[in-house]
Image (cartoon, rainbow, N blue to C red; front, side, top):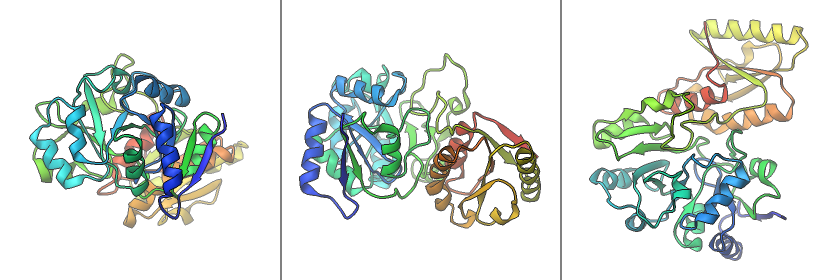
Length: 348
């Protein structure tokens, strides 16, 4: 298959968008930018189209997809009941990086929901994504546009590296704005539960609807555990190299990474280090990459996946990363980093 490259970095191209919409309507796949990461889109109401997503990504079929809509009015067709909390959350955070789980209607095929009776829905805050949803019929199922388990794509080139020849079109909208996937909140439980942290923090949700909790399943490594949302069960975001997160007091972390990286280099290993801008100059061994500034935490989320992909391309053998427990997005950054490391954390 020849993958079409559609350049929309300067804005929506109406002719290319009509082509993209027709691809989705015919049951095939288009990768597109959102404000979080690039998504791999298919018609959310076509069960065969959803299966093509799983096939292209190599994604387990019990890992649910998110349905993307272009208007809150579209909820009525795909959920059986819209809770009052959903109205409040959509008014506060849509369009934006928040996914809401509700009871699905029969219109949504089980191939989209991983066999569950619930559906995850969000309205992205990106003009290209919204234009594609409208051009495609109003409902696009889309996980991240990468090979399953790999670091999520934050540029069109990342999508090309993983999926060229496997999908019909890649829309290049430039680099994304946030760099980690949306927050997912489940409204089907008595107490709303965050199933995946993201840019919309637990505190922000509580400010709007009151009591919200983090789901215990976020930490589950039980192979029998059935995920209610993307990213809850399977290893995600993983580089090819062994990744270790080093956590503790700043000076202890810097000393430990300096020692570990020196030992790795002395053994003949190619070592990568992920640091904050404030600490990058402290390291003298291996390949040091700054993820961004702790004072501007959005820069860390924007660059993290790109650094992991760069280390793959450089053939790095081991990676040591600082911990990034920043105020708003820290929970999301660390959720992705811990999954990428396979929960390998060194406390110093």
